[in-house]
Amino acid sequence: MRWGMTIDLDRCNGCEACVVACRAENNVPTVGEEDCEKGRMMSWMRVERYWEGEFPDVKARFMPVLCQQCDEAPCEPVCPVYATYHSSDGLNIQVHNRCIGTRFCANACPYTARAFNWFDYKWDAPLDQQLNPEVSVRSRGMMEKCTFCVQRIRGAQIKAEDGKTTVKDGDVQPACAQSCPSEAIVFGDLDDPTSRASRMSTSGRAFRLLEDLGTKPKVIYLKPVDWNTSQEKESAS
Image (tube, rainbow, N blue to C red; front, side):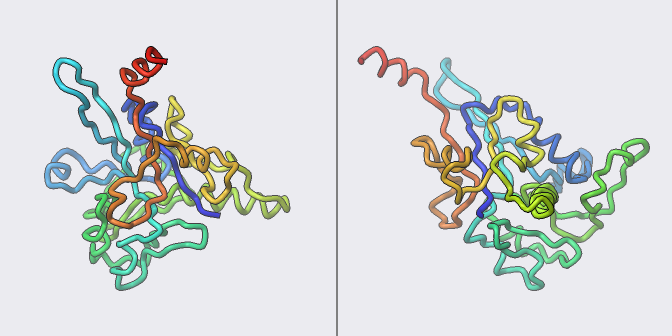
């Protein structure tokens, strides 16, 4: 089993529901405008905006960026305390209570997908009541990042073991995939050729972010469809 994700950029409309869901599910604090200006953002997931075409035919495009769960992750070998490691099912795990805050992993990550917890952030009442009990609230001085909502993955695996079955495609959905209104984000086992994520990863539109670096990301993006080109081909045929 090798967990992975596909993101169809043609479906993404930049609503950032995935970002909000990620923060709520994983107890990601809000750091405030002042810290953001200092580059101390705490979001585990962001939506990058870029422009395609030339004026006046310009289109806004959006790309959700999160930890790419690399098979050859540059963040893993630089950690002196093995706080980040590769699991047997392909996840790039972050052990929070082992991290000593060297930030070597963040420096090695080419995707800027990690966030450092500079302070002990607080949730004012009544927001403290919405914290997810299945995810720890991290203290200052440690690195944080996306883990594909590993608490949901492990929960589904335990449930499947109790029922003496296996985890089926669609049984696990990270918060970002569950909240996406356009179903642009699909999660599943990339080693299962019948899974939806695996089938989408073989599309002719598929590509990986900064693939030339050799990190072998398990987040596969699907290029936006060029409607003008598609219509020209249909007219020609």
